[in-house]
Image (cartoon, rainbow over all chains, first blue to last red; front, top):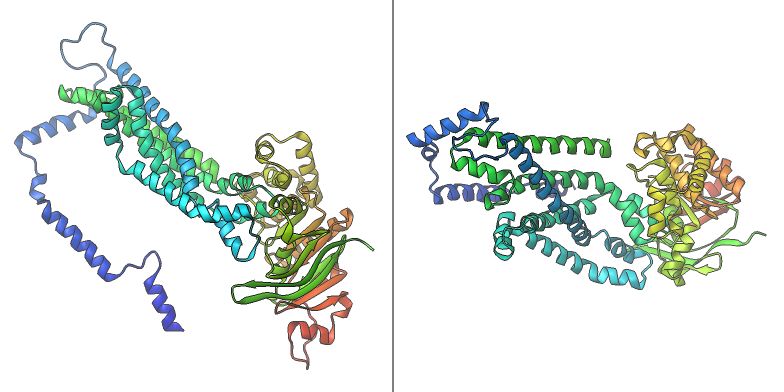
Length: 300
Length: 259
């Protein structure tokens, strides 16, 4: 009996990794380094690179408060106003993308989870079987698999690639940027939401079912409230990621922080670049702080 | 004589190869208080779960009032369950919702999604007052808007009782409601549940490990062992050989000492 137990422990569990698998992983890593001809010496920049890096990082402690350059056209808004406007638009793009992606992620995540059919499957062994539960057990696994596949397809294309596609199709319209962020984010949210719903404790849902609640009510008020704190925290984290994505989409010409960062960088106005970077940092820090507060309220 | 609340006729339940209940027959009358006693794994919980249709027998019939549970439609089963309150050992509350929301969830059996949403977000004053009155009855009136996970274990148990009572049920089922609490609180809880059922004329079926409490609070004990009923009668009759037979004790020595 003792020996049997030892075999079980070695074979399973989150910390159990077979030595052969570990060896393969290490070898694969080593081969990749060799195949890509990575050399530590390449990390050392040339003389020009060093000068450029020195100039750029030198301005980190003295970001610009006014515009750099000499021929500033009349009517150009002050740098800080431009930075704030770009920050507001970055937030707007991220928020506009989060709305459909959270709704889509929730619906797709619910479909991908087994929450709406596994109780029928378990009940089939000893409990009542009705025609609706038969249908749910019959189509549930297939529908879940389809939802997972769709979510995987959405997120397997990065938001930058979606942006290239939408730019080609729609041109530079705000909708192109919002759709480019919303689609892969919906896929990511669906995967994580689905897993969180599946991992949420189910006793309360069982109790509601036993007192006669309809399946949709059981799901909404027995199961979802248990998953909601984690789902909210994760959605807020994705909003933070959305801010970065929206900023980066500025490189394509959308009027977010990335647009101004790229423009200032090309003009070698490093002080301005740092101003925009600090504004982005402040945005991300603010969302992080907010998410912490929300989570505290939901969980504590 | 009171009408029959439940009838089990030749009911057998299997989980895979294991026989949980073996050709069990039992009548429970409306307003009766019945304690299910017997060793662990004897089938007490399975019997309780049969009564609200959570478990399906492989043979035999389970009737609640005039209804054969096997022939009920999903809507019929929901209506039946709305009339049966259940208190579980592990309470099964939603810990991150308020006490009021958990108690009002007791009404879900008679509501659709719209009604449930209203109860959770904008409850009617009358419904809140009823929840408050029930919490007062179980002794935690001042906790109406507290989050459940901020309450002690004993207080949470009272919320679970209040939720079951909010259903306004005709029957209360309790599955080992006191096996996880200290002896003093166990006695209080069993006293509370039996008092409420007497006040309201509810049928009460409770599985209990603690034979002393079963003897003190229940006029009828049903003893199970190995999925079969070995005893059915007044507590005073569960003595001597009947007691030893139920718990399979050696016939020399060993008397009824509860536990």
